[in-house]
Length: 631
Image 1 (cartoon, rainbow, N blue to C red):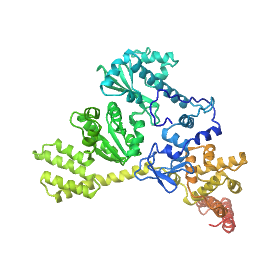
Image 2 (cartoon, rainbow, N blue to C red):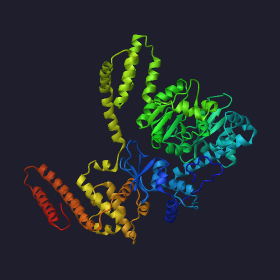
Image 3 (cartoon, rainbow, N blue to C red):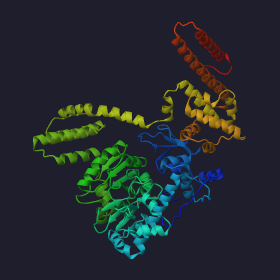
Image 4 (tube, rainbow, N blue to C red):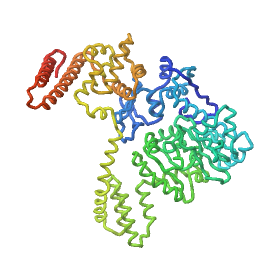
């Protein structure tokens, strides 16, 4: 498999072209995978009963609501409603369309898709070309580093930094020659024009708009990978101090800096196994850490840690160590990252390095054991780190500064939910500032009331806003009784297609008030006309019913207990009756509003409306008395 192996210079990707993929090949690809194993690459799963549970990889949550069925090979989140089979999972998690999801899985399984095997699209073609161009560029830079005199100085530099050939190859490091058009000319010889290089962020326009030149020149190259080990961008470090020390690829259809963690494709397995991640600042910090066996290490690409990056880490582990450089920039980055990680539900500890040190320098000078014993084991909780930083910033001999320091310290304590931990810090501050513990508790109570009540309500609203489950969407303007009846009928038809004709005798798709259910029913009714064989396989059904929300609902249904056969007939009749009665009640409501608008007018219009009302009322009573079901 190529999913977690990272950069491989000998790897050849599957080339896929136009037209729909045959159903038998879809099944062949599907059968090569266990959905539990694939999902586990993105979020830690624990077995409970006959299912696996974990934190949803599609929305931020602290309590697991995401489940995978190994028997049915389906997943579903009861928080956000995400669900489907392995193809839908790859589409959602990688934000790709179906053809690219097929290509990804086929490549992992070593299955070559024949020419004309996958539908074409402009987005798919562009991304495919961009992946190919990035892969070609990475090979070019790596070749320059190892096989040419132009790369000799850079290779010597990397070796002096203690990097082995194995780790250089693993991370695919390279060198961009100090020329304006090295990559541009190489790509042209391979039949690749400047326009696609521009879209990949590998070249830029000349100032006079007369041509292009290489973005990376005279720099050591660090390929940046996505979760599947494909190159999506580059970082470049200057060797001669010209220009900025580091230069990254710009935003492209493949590369979004705020959503990417450097080294995560290599680190993810270890992070999940250890339930621990280490965040550092730079490329060299990550590579050196991996060489010294700390393979749970990642970096946030020189930016402040983002919510998306924290979210990626929380899916794999609970405990996160921040080990940024021991300088002002590192301290500021640490401070900013704390709230982001805590909001994601991570247990955060800060691992301060000796002044002037960074992880790369510390590891090369003292080794992995010292890093473990002197840095990680001495890491402190967030609150303790913040208090130490605050206390170091103020002159406590100055009364005004002392009061400001005390106020800032109490704000830190106000965030602590554990009463015992909070009391411990209150005692510490009382001794430090020579004030009574009761006075601090009183002031702390005021601060919590002022700052955190309103914040909690905002957070609750935000949390509700991002968990738009299917049920929540359907609740908007839709009667719950009818919704339940419609869903029950859809579930019965999905699980037993032999029941479709029974329901079809009484209802049509337009009789379903919910748009989602109506769309599924329409497709199911069409299937019964096209298919002689009644198939109830979830994978087959997901392949013929279109729509992401439809797939979510179908996966949810297949993960539920099916209706007993002896009860199905009565349940169908009950649901049909409920839907029909509600339809008649709506018609009556319309007529009643029309009659009310006429007031005391005794015209023929009133008589006609009244006659219609009584006819509907009669049909309603007949339904109540009929043997189709009960109220």
